Length: 522
Image (cartoon, rainbow, N blue to C red; front, side):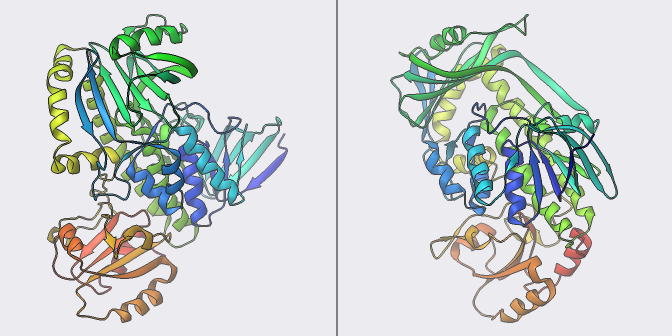
């Protein structure tokens, strides 16, 4: 028997980094939501460690980046260890150069991300229904109905226009939607441990010790002598349910590191299997999947948590515009189009990187031992190499060039293309992104100063109201360098800071067709 009924716009199932990020984004658009999670509260145990530049840019829009950076540890260096000696030293300080306001890797573990996002929700009068579990869901053209069991054991119905499953790799939402989750499982067991350790290493350096058929990573954490150990156990375990002790883990780490390592305290440790899978599709009707519920992959490059947050970022503005009656519901199909394609690419890339790090075949071992140290040392000495690697790892290089939302009619004239992330640069010493924080489309005209665009301000306001804001930006030398155009041009930017179209025509021509035919403006 139902004890109560709640009505909202969006049901979010799962309050990990993805679900909480979606809630934070929806709040920016004043969209009502209910977020539930079967856990008792934010997690204290974190396999996910790294926050990349693109995530920090997303956090910055919500005013959260500064707190994340101050609460984390920036990785300045990576040291490769072979036989107890540093075989290569990689300088990652300022790795991203001028490509992002956050040109570094930040160690800011999952628990801290969850706490940051959750406290932001609470500060704005929102909360999570903890210890609340999804039991069933139904949907039709009118909406979604979810039956949940609350902490008190009561059964509650929540009705909404849409539901998003952010409920992890074993997602009840995905199971209820009967979506396949196909892929593979790496046969070896992996571990993560949070320790206090006496170690003759620099606490701003990540240490990587590859072995014959295993590896160990030592991540510097905030706090004195605080390290996170990550690696794999080389044996294939014929008893998958056998409990592994930390003593076994320690016995594998020390021969790999071969430097004095005294583990004083084990705060916690966990073992797990590595899977690489994605759902066959990320949406069914009014229900969506995001984060680990939609895709899981190897930990190579620390992509998982960041990718889930980007899922939420992509979906939030589309849900919001539909719920606000600004666009037709057909826009929501682009979530599956864009994020499923990204997940497939990411799984392929992380699998390749993971093979290099952990595969026991002789040619991978040869590469790790003989080629990688020399290659790694050279790569970080050259800015061109950094500018190639940083966008790929930090996710600022992710693009939606193949999306139906990206219009390419005139972008062949530019170095930047439709679907690319809005490049980062400064205007009079100020971050360009800070002018683009409003949750709407942004029309930018890059001007040579020969024309007054006041009339466009009035036209944009009259035709598009709260749908689009308008900026005139001088053709600074940096802008010319980035975009490859000495002539004035216009750029239409999506709410998630990806470029919708570029044109040398600085009028409103083309915008009406784009909004009505592509986005589905009502």
